[in-house]
Length: 68
Length: 192
Image (cartoon, rainbow over all chains, first blue to last red; front, side, top):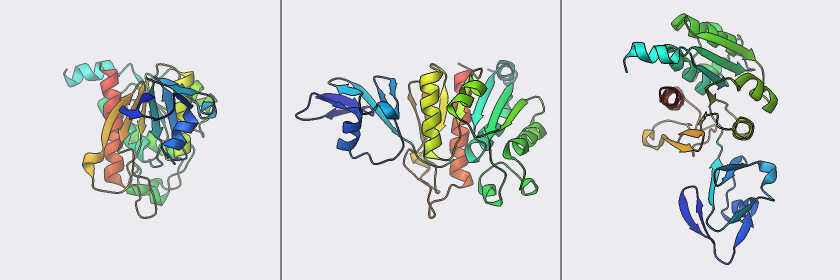
């Protein structure tokens, strides 16, 4: 499937859908604290195992960095 | 717009600032200078000597509660600003209670965990409320990596990559740049 991930086109071979958590693991996003959205809608951290990313979706995975 | 017009428009606005450390204290001072009507500031910490490398406090304020010291500094610059100072550690519930009347909320925490908490809370519980976050400002130099982008109602200021560490501490220049980018974003939203 083809999705937009953080404003970039991303082609994921041999899959037509996956959970947000699977996408995070596939992309090796190792940050402990993230904010995830599908098509502009927040996916809370405890919903990542159930929220499904499908072909054509616009996914944002924001990395939260300490400091301030 | 003249400065008088800007002040007139800003005088009726309320901005919430979650955290009074490097981002929050400097952002609050910038907003106070331009004449925001009301600032709602929260923090649970006291001023420490190690904060003075970036935070808008003075040596003589060491040991004071940050929110009270910051209120004092804001009033010393612009007594027309109304400041509500809360010495609390924010939770999802208190974010909703304290900030729901704000025109814009500024995320100014230091810990990633707290940044996640406020972003998720505002996006889910206060839909449509603009939230200006600071992500990535450790170290020095590399000015061109500090940038701004919009993610719906979430406005992101910072390099989104530099983590603080023993060898890359947060310091006045880069933290100040990001704090002022946040204040600049608040103005852009309020003067639209």
